[in-house]
Length: 455
Image (tube, rainbow, N blue to C red):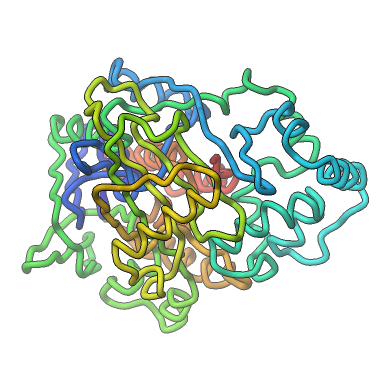
């Protein structure tokens, strides 16, 4: 198993439970990948805002609840979002929209909804797909500014699949239906472990190890050699692991560059045609029990590069968090080696503080700042990405003894519960005698194509 993120560690757990011999290789010193937790000033924090959604497959959720017991808590969502210079509860509620948004905006959005059946996308781009589905008012004031911040390009430069994978309310009717259901819908709750989101993966890893899985952390994969009987995975320090099959959750372009013998030039060129958006995470340690009562503050507006500020302490009822301090986590999308990526702690802290003050919140006055950087946070579906991805995916499907899956391995935006579905499906396709059912996996891949990210 190459990588111990949600998909990798989930698959390792399932395989070990089925009495398969599993070796997991992970570069980091903890499991969970970008969904891991770690300590800042004595509090458990995550790499940004993470939740386990109620739409998690029932069998998987049941297994997680069995493993974590009361540590897996069902929590109410208490977020807020800033739109048109005003804070509204998030998930959105009809009363807030009518009370706080300008009547001119509401009338324009209503007009767009009325004319939705007459609109058709003029091209398969993020901008055209959403403009046809939701109308210009919501797009110009919310989705398009957010897209520019999140992916770093103009909406018309993104493929239409970016909209289909990221926007679940793809019509005025669906959006209105969600609003009218109000607080009774499942979107207003989530599951979260009392020791941070990473407790999910730590628990699965411990259970897998208890059943014989060999989990090797702080181990970097450098090369994957194809042999007649399987693979040999070369790691840093000269280590080598021989296996009948390598299951990879590594970024697909990275895997293509690691395989020996190397793929054709066209495959390597395709690997260079896929791009990830990076993320800088800024953690502010405050000398107070709570900064606000909200778990997350969403900032889609264009005046700040910050997209979200979360307070991990408000995601859980742990009984373990110190009462005299809290931590805020600000998410800032960027590109590797750009100005934001290279900025120091003090500069980033000033940016986050200025953002909060401008948004009408209190200056947090942090006593400590910690910065983490994720080089591959989000895949960018730029115009023409489909050709590059299809070339890489077709290559991976024909390489003997290698399986790619997970967010990075399939170049998708999926949530953690989607990654777990991939892990369960992959493990189910492996028979007890070690034969992998490619047809079963192909059926699972077709189901994955319908995944839409939930925020």
